[in-house]
Every structure is written in structure tokens, then in C-alpha cells.
Image (cartoon, rainbow over all chains, first blue to last red; front, top):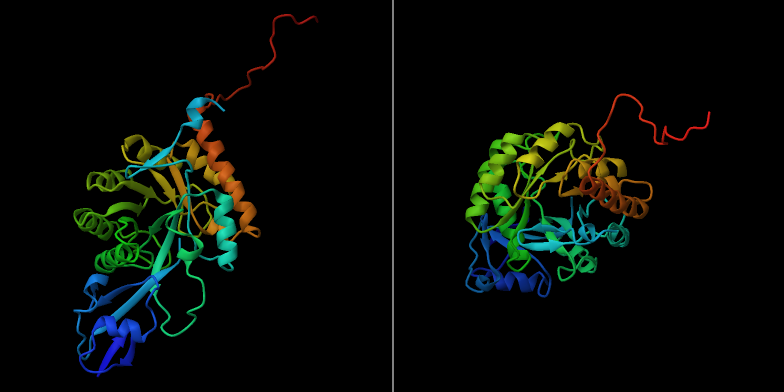
Length: 66
Length: 264
């Protein structure tokens, strides 16, 4: 199935949870935060957050800014 | 230095800072220059932005938080680029999660790409939501004393009027309004945006501001590290001049040498 990951189409296996996606993207150990469909998902809930087709996932990080 | 100025510190949301210069971390050539400029500025509070991660790219590139570790600096995430209440509130919630519950944020809700002036109505609404959601809000606003008073009444921990448009370097365009905002306020007032060079920073402090937040004035200087050092000194000089209390300005001369004892 397809989700929208940081604005771009991204194919994932059915019934994937957010924790699996983070592992697949090789982001474990990095500092980031995640929204699904414009709602913050705290790290503690990654494993219970099951993705469905069409979900809009945003993964954000800190960058330089004023 | 007198004891009063050596113990003079800035308190924001219950935390005490020695430096009254807050700096942004954007527009630098690279992470190394960012780190060196911020070190030279002496700033203890640094702003960051939150943006999409580059999925699958540049995983080895250092992150801004590796260069400016939250253990050493107070990280102030901003809502730059937000033009409505919803995106500003979402950005703050993401930033709080990113920083393990750290709830100090710089709220800016912009109204127009050409001027980057704040959308004051949206800023007020977002501030109210964020304060209720336990954020400590330092808020970018225009130099309107009535709006500044309203933002303080909503519970913002600091109010940050612009001196001139963001990134313009035009200096303090409306010193009288800045002074009025300072005189009305019980929370720290910081000039945010518009400073172009060291004398602008000194003027802001002489007006009684509690601090100045700047980015482009340092990052866009020919030598950012040297300008960061200049800004540090200007902020300190302006603050000491404010505390010292300037002489009254007079239209005509007043001789500095005594009249008495003239021998001719």
C-alpha cells in the first residue's frame, strides 16, 4: 500500500506500524519527531500506531533557523 | 564593573541567563561557521527551525543539535514559515517532542512573504492555544504596544517586537514604540528582527530592552565570527549604558572644564 511520506508517495507493506517504518528508514538513534495525518505521534506510541493506505506521515528534524 | 552590572541577568520562564544576546542558527556557510559564530556571540539561547528530514539522504551530515547540544544551550525552536494558527501550533508540538518535552518556543505567525510582518490576529490565537497547552511562549510581534500588552496578558513569557522586517538589517525603525512596550511590560521584551549592525543592538539595549534576538546581522556579515563578537560587546555596552542612566540631551553646549580659576 502507499502512504505519503514527507510529501512523497512511499510504498510500505500492509499492516506496518510506525515503529517498523522508522526502522526501515534507518532513523533509529536519530533525533526526530513524527506526525500522522497532522497529529503528533509521541515516540512511546510508535509501536501501536498502525499505518493505513493514504496516511500522511511527516518526519521532522531540527535545522538551522532564526 | 560594578557589582550591580556583574549580577545583572536575564530571566526567562524562570531560567537565568548571563547573556542578553539570543541568536539564530540559519544562513551560515556550514555547521563549523555556525558553531564558531555562536561561540563568539556568547549566546546561551539559540533558535532552530523544524523541517522535514531528508529521507535516505545525508544521514552522515551533522545535525544542528550535534553542533549545539541542548545540554549546553537553551534551544528555542521557532515556527518560521508558518502563515496560520494550525501549522504554528503543530510545529510547536513537534518541536516539544523532538526536544524531549522542552516547552520553550518562539512563536511567529507570518502574514505576508514580502514583509514577513506578523499576522497579529493569528499570533494572538496561536499564543492562547499554546499557553493553554503548557508551552512557554516567546512571541514575535510587531512594534505595537497594545498588541504587546495583550500577548503578555495571554501568558507569553517574553514579547519580542520587531525593530524592522526580518533579515532587512534596517535597524530600530520605531524607537519610541519599543520604549513604550518596554515601559508597559512585566515580562522580558526582546527586539527580534531588523538589527543590522552593532550600534543597532546597542540602541535596542539603551531603550531598555531585556535582550536582542538576531540571525542575519551576524550570518550575513562578511566575517560572521567577528560580527558575533561585536554584537556581544554592543549588547553589553548598551545594557550598561541603560543601567548607568544617560545624561539628558541638551540643545546647546555645556563646558566640561571649570570656568572658575581662568587666568586670562
